[in-house]
Image (cartoon, rainbow, N blue to C red; front, top):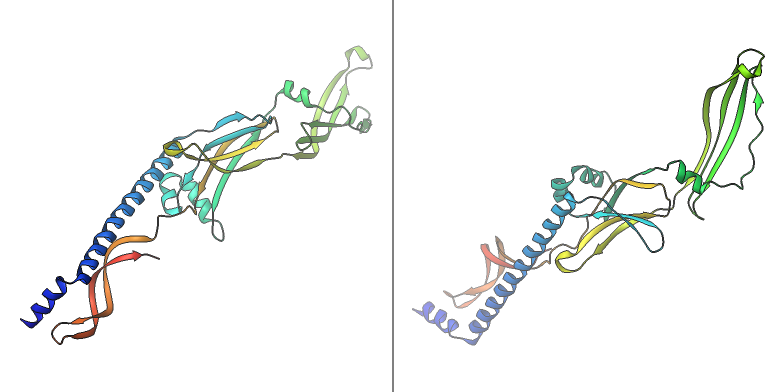
Amino acid sequence: MKVLKIIWKFINSKVFGYLLVLAFAVLFLGTCNRNKSLKEESVRQEHNVTAMNDTIKTEKLKSGALQVSIDGYVADVIDLEKYNKDLADAVKAQKGKVITLNRVVFQLIQDTTELRRWIALNIPPPEPPSSTSDSTWKVPWAVRYVYDSTNYDAYSGITNIGLRGPYDLSKVSVFHTGTELTYRNSQIGLTWGQKYEGVGKNKRLKVYAQTTHPAFKAKLLEGTYVDFPKKTHWLQGFGVGPTFNIGYDFLNNQPAFVVGIGIHYNLYKF
């Protein structure tokens, strides 16, 4: 009876009331926090599904630069393997802590009209042809394309030609015995990274690359934000585990150390 009186007295005390209010407040905040985390996780998963099915988009900026972009992933390595295993393997192959990772494969494609537009005329003339035999010659050549102060392509090489036929020049034919590219110097200014576009539900992580090089054509563009902010560590809910704390021994009416296994509520999870 003595123990029951003590328990009943504690239940009717202000301390118990305060503890009860605090417990309900923690439970309410914890529920709100978990609902928020679940909503954020759902939005992230939806974003990754969109990224998996997105295609490269090309846009010409006001500056004249060409920008290609595609939705990127917001996922750690484990989640990323569900959507893009090759990209996940590329993350795992890196040393250290990966924050973001982008991959781009591009081609440089120009036709005759485009090349003639950018050919540079103020280049030193190549060496004159030199004879390699009585009927064959080595013809050096050089060409340079300048697109702006950053982007250019320069090539030089040798073309081998020969003559065959009788001494009558009207019946002589010229034949090509081979061309060799002996030097190349190309420079491409390329800017790439990740950015967020849109707001609210339309907010998307974009992987982008841009350049003013006119021959740039993106064949592959993909990326992931690996070290994204995770859900909050506060108010993580209930758990079961070993406990060691100070309690109250109602039988002996005195404080006591309590050791055992119990149900607890995680205010903060590391």
